[in-house]
Length: 80
Image (tube, rainbow, N blue to C red; front, side, top):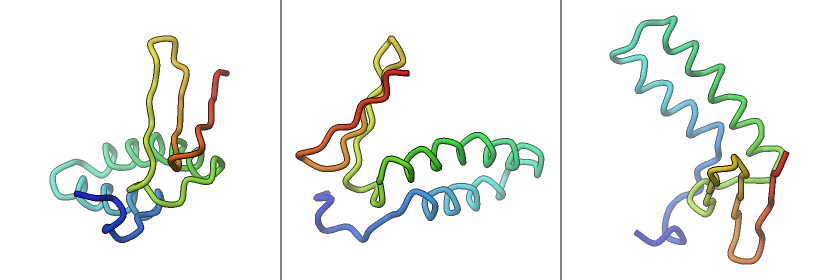
C-alpha cells in the first residue's frame, strides 16, 4: 500500500487506537502499564516532529542508536 494514499495517522491517535484494542483481552493494570511505556515513545515522536506514522520509518541499531526518517529528505539521529 502506498503511504501517499493513506489518511494521516498521528502518533497519539495510533496509541489511542492500539490501547483500545488491548483493552479487549488484557487486564486494566496491563493496559495502563502499556500506555505509560508507549506514551514516552509517542512523546519522543512528537518532539521529533513526526506527525504522520504512515510516512515515518524508525530503525534501531544494535548500539541502540535511533534513526527516525520522517520524509524522504530528512533523517534525525538520536545517539544519546
